[in-house]
Length: 179
Image (cartoon, rainbow, N blue to C red; front, side, top):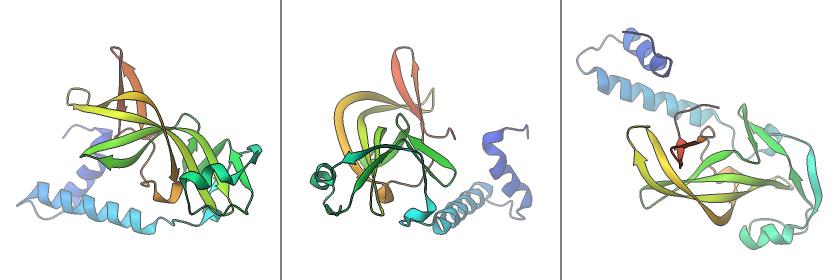
């Protein structure tokens, strides 16, 4: 088999397995087990495992966040940060993330702000409208909107940020690209 970096893990599993009866099923099961192991070992919800960039603004009132995220404690001070690093992935203004599945289509957004109130981390995201999946580019065609959403960082799926590219006048989000 010729070497392709994106298939490296699957090829290692295929060489290591002794079952050649149903190789695609074996690879699918091993991939699911690997993903479950990674997800199980992620430490979620503990702000001490995050590293924050410099404080951009500390005059933010938690009232604005509390309106969109009721779990915010309004008595604690809210800070706005330039960036946040979690699991060796840097989240900052302009980072594109997957945050939800709506009507069987993934929802993507561009981070516009990062906030921390006590141990609670929130993101302000500019939402994108997913139009269709382009099989040729193996990417989702998206449209930028003027809608914003506030999202609790702990509820964000813990997958790598995705890549937004512009090709032939259209915007595409590539999910398999690791930044």
